Amino acid sequence: MRLTPELAAAFAGVRRELFVPEGFHRRDGSRVEPGDPAFLPSVYRNDVLVTKLNGDKPISSSSQPSLMAMMLGALDVRPGMRVLEIGAGTGYNAALMAALGAEVTSVDVQEDVAARARSALDRAGAAGVRVVAGDGYLGVPDFRYDRIIVTVGVAGFSPHWFGQLAPGGFVMAPVEHAGHHPVLAARPGDPMTATVVCSSGFMAAAGPLGARHSGSHPPSAGILAAMAETAPPRWASPLDAIVYRDLWYAAGAWDHRATLAGLPGREQNHLALLDATGTGGAVIPADGSVLAGGPEAERYTADAVALIDRWWSLGRPPMSAWQVSLALDGDPAAPIQVPRTWTLPPPRR
Ligand SMILES: C[S@@+](CC[C@H](N)C(=O)[O-])C[C@H]1O[C@@H](n2cnc3c(N)ncnc32)[C@H](O)[C@@H]1O
Image (cartoon, rainbow, N blue to C red; front, side, top):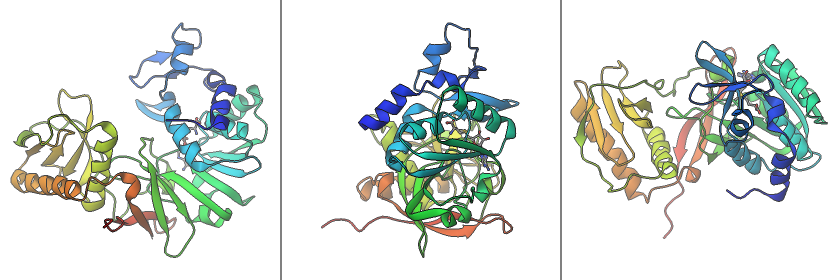
């Protein structure tokens, strides 16, 4: 991807190592301490740095820089804008937005994480950033923001955010869809709608932002054993990662059983349709084959093949083509705006 000169200057000017002073875990689980020879090379790899675990579950991190760059590019932050960030984490993304000239308020639900982000921002000399501890569901109602960026995976948009936007502002958030968190951009309106910015993988938010709802996909499954190939590969070379995500997005729009699953011996995660009981389902790898298992393997195979056919016959729509309508759902005491229907523009004649 090509960075704007302003974004390139922000990445060049903000030192990421200042935001992980106590070390981190890499994606493969290995630990890197500040004194290790691998420290700086790992900090400047295009990868997530996990800074806090609960058991073996990551609960805070510095996100993958290419994803941050994509989101910041689409956020279109300009000097003087007020930005609210949900998920302060290490403070690195907030520092980048400050370097772009924004006045940033960043909130994190974990007090110790918020405190460490504050110290890191001080160390880095980032001006114009304030870190608040609290649940981002409520936003931070002290200002009207030109942009709200959410850097943790959510099930939907908090209605509070729309009430805290300045005229012309919008909210960008990674919203759960079929086992991933594609990033959506939403503006206040009636009805509420959103567009798809890019694919992403984020840890899930705590509290009402992470609530399950009537349209939730099945939770991602671990490794599915006992699946056998029931339809042969459709493509001689597998879809590349971006196009596979496009198929995945469409599957999630059309079928509520769509989610993410692993297969034995394969590193990659796969698009899967899972049945509610967890006894069976089908997996669609990137070569377009189908693997199915359980008592309804035949029906699952037919449904998976029909999904691929539908996506193919529509000209393989990219995820960015979808319009998403939102509706209130989730915890009735703290509802969120969740994706409810997905539409594609009519085909061009
Ligand atoms: C991936 S990290 C954010 C990365 C961060 N922007 C950075 O630059 O390092 C996600 C953060 O979201 C926080 N979080 C989770 N649920 C939250 C919630 N409901 N409100 C605010 N923050 C939340 C976590 O504590 C975690 O620190």
